[in-house]
Length: 280
Length: 184
Ligand code: SF4
Image (tube, each protein chain N blue to C red):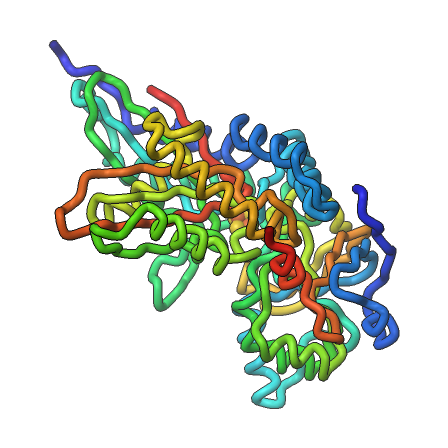
């Protein structure tokens, strides 16, 4: 069978479109999570805050203003079918060009520096953080995930002993959210990578947070629920002003690991969870 | 909104500051000055070298924000607060210049909270992450210093009914800490 030809120019066009959608529109599932929290929040200022966040999403969508002034770093997940033949400019250049175009065209804030210590703004919000995997089939799936600096600064990784218990992991995750307090703009969406290598756990914590829904495995679904319940009791609440709405979602992604290791990575995402996907 | 929101105008006087208690809710109209990491660094440098400040900070409220670019026909884009702890090392300098209020998100260090009582100033937060909602309450924006810093430049903003939540007052009150004391 001949491979299906897809031009990297088409991938770039898709990236531009997804950045636009993600910057101005909360994913339906995220919006629904916030509505559910608002309906159940009993704390006065907590409820007011959730209402403002929902109104903000409405204004952003209707007037095409960025949901948050921190328009994020761009994380791109590409799943490329192995029956695809990519044509045109180098994939990485195409994606980075798309980021520069989108951030200019949509009046988004450019928050990337080209060097971590010399810190000169690249002026385009490129480069993106691109994660590519080869999968079956003849399609390319593109997911764009925009991550702000305030919540990224609250990320954490810990290498547990393999004999540590699920309770120890719950304590650590809850501790990370408590230590972050109001900084990452709660209610937070938590991505948790368990297992793998240190780097794999961190990447899985990024993939997990945009998964949505409950874990398919009841063992992990239960763990997610217990973490959410513990977080509600911290009374951090929306933006740290108090209330039960501390976490809007908890999502675990597990992976096989070495007999001697048990890495756990926590990706704390703010209430402004921005991502969009498309398949080419 | 359900809470009791009081109108307030900026700049602030000592009387305003003394009347504010942690947990109070305000709708602010008047002037704000923006500054974040780099602008604070530069202002510190000016003070250290005895240079001239680009604006009179007495009684003013500093808003920690780096707005998104203004779309055509608007004064500003989205403009919510950034995380405040990064500005903690500069609190002494800013309050020394006569600043009476700061708006950001997240807790302040021990020293900043002490300085608030000493210099009689308040730390506020607002609806962090609601950049579009807050940007719409900003009527005018003009650069007053450090234009080369782009979104990190100092802007003078004219705001109307801009929501503020008092976090740290001059009496040692801390809204974030009181929330945590109510844990279940
Ligand atoms: S943590 Fe999220 S919502 Fe808060 S300022 Fe940063 S990007 Fe915006």
